Length: 140
Image (cartoon, rainbow, N blue to C red; front, side):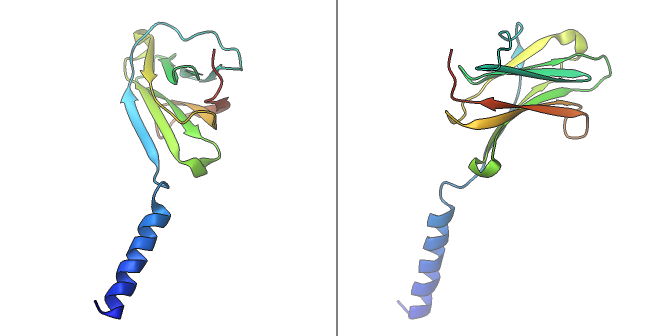
């Protein structure tokens, strides 16, 4: 094998090894109708609100709830993301049922014992948003 080919193949292998394990893990789901989330306690259940939407996260089971709270024709979403963002995971739960549709819930699997943020968004990607700090490691 020529020296040039060995250098190119070695360089490609090095890039593959360096980037292995650094890919972002993100997913989105449309929530299923659900009852309300457990009561917020700031230890293993957190909630956040913005005009038009409310979201909650329970670390036990990695469950996210989101509710549309304003009849305005917008969908709403809850997003949980790693914080700091260098660990690169995130999940989004969508509620397209409208204000009369009640709570929806998404059951995710996220890395344990990590700090993160719970975001709530009225009109995903362009609307009002707010967040609160969470932890994925606390259990009930």
